[in-house]
Image (tube, rainbow over all chains, first blue to last red; front, side):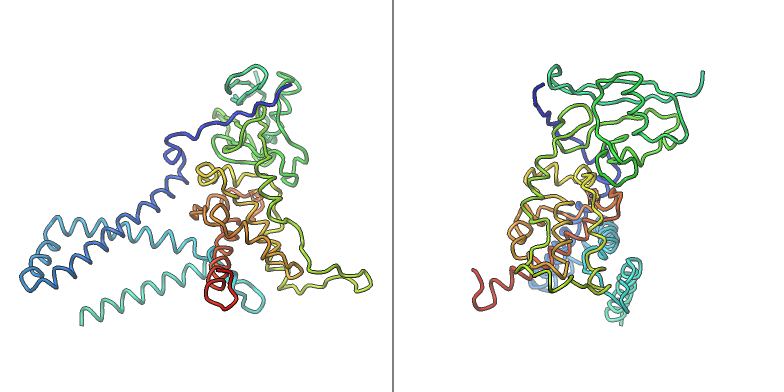
Length: 129
Length: 247
Ligand code: SF4
């Protein structure tokens, strides 16, 4: 009897073969779109520093159909990113005990959503007003 | 003829096979059978050479972890009635070298676990005359869920980082380290931090979360690892900012 452990190679499409792994890669790939949107905002700052005309052409580009589509895609991915991360936040923090009982995971997740809504509303009010 | 179910089992005989292959077995269907019962039937009635591990039949010993239709499962916890009418494919746990048929080589895991001082580390031996160590319910609650690990290794089979980084310490070992770190009787966190805080410790983890989803004992290794990341970050800061820090 010989010992000859066989190592199976990782399947080249390992993340496409399993729903859980696919969702994980999707979550990770959202960072590309979050990064893209940050680059768009940075570009806005650069254009602003270049004067009124440059700023206006930046605004025009943002409100063009292509600009709106890109922003909507970024928004969708950023929202997915936020929702998936909120879902795992209870794991990322040490248990908080209240009267000796840990706060349930769903309460922590809900708290994040409520805070998100409040902050978004505040931003809208500040910018809109 | 009474109802049957087809089980496709990965086979690998290191004496004969260059690489694994699959064998199909047609076995009687029984409502109350789990995959482990089917394997026992195959071994007794169809092919005595089939090799697999199993013992308690009640999700306590952690021996019968395997892939069932590509998902890491305890074979004793996996009713074939949930796969009625389907082909059931049984393979050894992913991300481990295959020793023979459904048995994997666990040496790598055992080495990683041993390197983490997986026991209570105390500063000095307490004489028996001082009596037992008392803990409050809150002190017990801080580590209790992490004591439930049965070393079934389903979490390693679920984790893509285990597959991508051979050196990654992995979910169960890090959860067990966390279990002792959180124990009020233990003072071994500093010792363990050499491994837990290293690249192949918690930092190879990208928080996939699959380990906690597949764990049959609700250990939540993903939580243990993220909490260790927080402590590791504090240790890192402390070593750099406080006078007398190491670097
Ligand atoms: S943490 Fe859960 S899945 Fe991993 S070895 Fe322990 S019991 Fe099994």
